Length: 360
Image 1 (cartoon, one colour):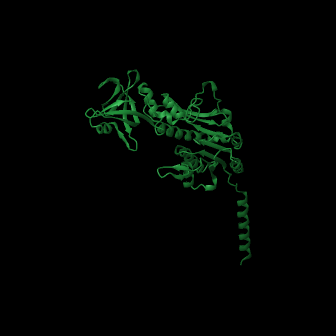
Image 2 (cartoon, rainbow, N blue to C red):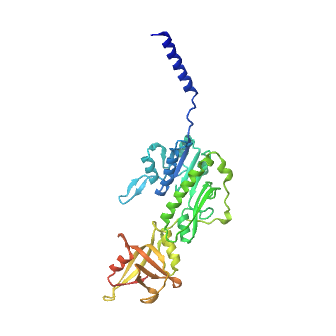
Image 3 (cartoon, rainbow, N blue to C red):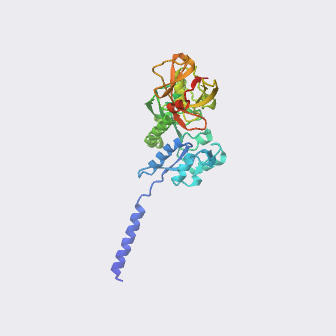
């Protein structure tokens, strides 16, 4: 081989090696841990996965913390939480999906420390985070809370807000502290509340908006500037949103219609709202007590009490009109009988075949 050619090859090889050694190494992405459990939390995780996949992203989803598998659906099979299932479907290795019974379990905390997360994000996780957990991530833990903090701190902010008939609510991005939902607020968004929207739809909307807020604020959280701009909450203005109890499902028609309508919206989905009525057969004289799940309502604008006064339910304009307290009336648009599908008021009324309906 020509010695000059060999020399050129040697020089080219070494030049290439030198350029390669001078090239900047890709920056290591900052590890982020997401904590969430129900289907509504998937919206946030999806936003984080999408943002982490962007070419200029500075972080990666390094792990998921969620509630343990539980029996769900009609088959009562033991299934992972919706968040865990979504993470698996996205290809996250199962050993990076954690489901401790308690977030303070020492074995779990030890594993979390090994991951060295710079930030933790929570959205409807459903578990109390102890101080030992909160001390691990470098930039702290940030929560998406579906209310305008310090209003409606607690487990059921959307339900309690609708139950109170608020005309405005929102979503807050706040640092997590040991006191319930009391950390400094990084950012918030407020929205008008439609008087027909139900809790599941409003919750889904607010969490979706919260995920957008989170992605917008992540750079300031990672560079530390979010901590300096976060606004401490005024505890004197705080209101509480305690967990919903199944016992709250029953409706009392002694209350005014707007109170009942707000309760139907607030408890939609779970546990729902129920009422007992009496079906009267004038021909036979029989009376049967019927339990109805009240699905959709509205406040009657034109109250006309007829057919026996305050005790009887009438049918008008495709709705069951139920007399309520204070001379008001509630229009029931959809109902559900035990073990049956949801039907509209017209179908239910036709099924009575001329029998009368009385409040119980």
